[in-house]
Structures are given as C-alpha cells and as structure tokens.
Amino acid sequence: MSIRSRCLLFCRSLSRVKVKTQSTFATIATPKMSAVMTGYGNTKLISGTEVPLGATVIDFRSDTVTKPSIEMRTAMMHADVGDDVYGEDPTVTELQSLAAKLLGKEAALYVPSGTMSNLIALLTHCKLRGSEAIVGDESHILHYEQTGAAQFGGINLRPVRTFSNGSLDLDEVRRKIRNSKDAHQSHSVLLCVENTHNRCGGRIVPHDWTLKAGRLARENEMKFHLDGARIFNAAVASGVSASELVEPFDSISICLSKGLGAPVGSLLVGSKAFINEAHRCRKALGGGMRQAGILAAAGILSLQNGPTRLAQDHVFTKQLAVTAQEVGKGIVEVDLESVETNMVMLKVNIETGVTPSSLVTRLATTTDKEKEIIGQDIRLLAYPMTELNVRIVVHCNHTSEDIKLAQDKLRFVLGELQGNV
Image (tube, rainbow, N blue to C red):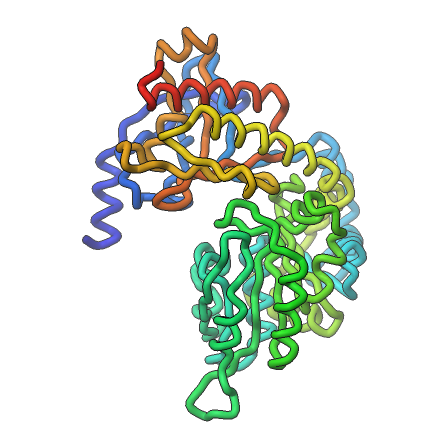
C-alpha cells in the first residue's frame, strides 16, 4: 500500500476527543493506530479549538514544546538588533561568542534549527559530491532529517551499528572506512556521533569511547562531528564540563530550543575557518536571518541559566521511570539503569494487545471512572517512538505538581490495562 493510501486510511479512522490545556484550547485525535504507525507524524495529538473545562494536559512529547520564560520574553523585547546577514546584530554576535567560549572552540554560528546545523556541518565537511559520512543506524541525522545530506550535497550516509548506550561499533566503523586511493570507491570524510542519544532514550555516550572514536577518525584523515543537541544534559548528568565532552570534535551542533528552553535556534560550533565556510552554507540554505537578535536574546539566557535547571529535569524523569516500572509490570518495561537524563523509554509488551500508539492514545484521554478516582481530568501527551517504545521527555516547564499528576495518571492507566482498576 502506498504512503498516500495509508495516510487516507489513517485520516478516515480518526475519532475525536476534546481536551483542555492550561492555556490553549485543543482537540485530541485518537486514531486506531497499528504498532508500526509511529514517529513525529503521530504525536500531533492536539489541534482544534474546543475543550472541556477543567482538563489538565501535561506534555511529555518532547523538550521542544517548551515556552519561553517571562525573563526571556522581556530580553527579546529589549534586544539590541542589527542585520545579522551583514554580521551587524550585536546580540547574535554575543550569543555566538558565548557558545564558542562555553564549548572551548574558536567560533559559532547561529542557525534556525538543529537539522540545519547538522546539514551545514555535513555540507561544509563533505565538499566533494559522492563523499561519505559514517553515522549510527539509530542516529537523528539518519532517521529524522530527511537525509538532507544526500538531497542537498550528494553525500552518502553510511550507517553502522548503534549500541544501547549510544556509542557506535568502532570495529564496523573501521571496516566501513573507504580506501580513497581506489578509484572505484568514494571518500570517507566524516564520522558523526550523537550525545545524548535520542533513540537510545537520552543515554550519555561514554567519554572514553568518544576519545577512541576521535582517534580513529584522525588516523583515517576524517573529520569528527557531534550532534550535541542535548550535550548540556550529558554534561550536567555526568559531571563533566561540556567543553571537555566536545574537545575531540571538529564541529558541534547544540540546540537551544530543547532542554535549555529557548523558543528557537541552534548553534554550530568549531574553528574560525570552519565557521567562515559554514556561514556561506547557511546563506545558501536560506538560514540567514536579519534582526535575529530578538531570538538570540532568549538563546543567551538559555545558555546562561538553562543548564542549572537540567538536574531537576533528570530527577523528575527518574521519578516517572520508577513509577512506570513499579506499576506497569506486564504492560510496559522500564530499564531504570538506562534512565540517565531527561528521557524515559516505556517498552510496550505488544503481546498483551497494547501498542505504543494505543498506549499514547489512552494516556491522552480519560474516563469518568478515572476522573472519579484521581479527582480530576488529566491528559498526558507522549511520543510513540518505535514499534515497541513510547518516549517520555521531561523539560523546564514541568513542575513537581505536574510530575505528581503524571504519576497518578500512569498508575491508573497501567493498572487499567492490567485489569486491576
């Protein structure tokens, strides 16, 4: 069946359940999803304008859904701006300097998104069409960025095995490095790593492994890129500074609009020569923003204040993980040892008839009996990430009360699915 046909069948199967967020009125779609209907396209559970009064929605789909603080909004309103395409926006310049200093590199470039940041890195490193970049088979670059490197740069992404802690199989990396002296083969130009690792559940890639990977890249005259969208989560949780974690890399992408709480933007960081070339690439991709200091002002605060909050996010995440593990036996499984930062993976036992999509749909709805027992209407939004896993992500907008309510919801729903409610 074609993708278009599947989408049509999916749309026809939608039923509608109305809910209320604290500040936004919305309607939840509750499709009859199969286990394979996963991904970002199935996380858009809120749309519309009508909801019942009194419902509380707690959004765990991603740390990208955060809203800027009052302090950020004030800084944005008063930001000193200029034309950044001409290099004349002082607030953007300040943000870029701050990022480079925090990561111990020479320069940084402000871009609209992490996807663009990674793409610019790939295009800047892999100038020759037909070049190869080695990436993990569970990497964000491979799964969630439309293989833009191939679309725009003619770059082949060559995947290698990803271990459960986010590291790559270096023996396989070594085997897959091309012999560029052979005219039959392409050039292996770049090795990409992701830390923390999204599809591995926010795992922190071991630093000793990173050092080995960096040495392997240098020995083979390859560049070394880090998709460090959540590198500050890794730094806070491991107790190792971000600058030390990224030291082996030639380029680093960091995201301001995830756990750090800014509304927009990422930064590409590296040497001055690399960033000068990346600047040209940003322009070609349409990423040059004019008076971008309005956005950069929030980014500065996210770098100054955001990392200190991440430790609390990690504590909240562990609390949710423990609750799900304790009350979800037989329905979901949680590996508590793998919960290292702000993500929990609920591995669904699909033999029970529950799927990631059906679990996400149930968490986003409620029943009269549930409201009677819990005492209020609670809706949790989560992400059906794979055929077996539901991802929950904690972020800076969550409070201790949110976590308590989420625990109550998990206890009821997982108990209901076990037949205990």
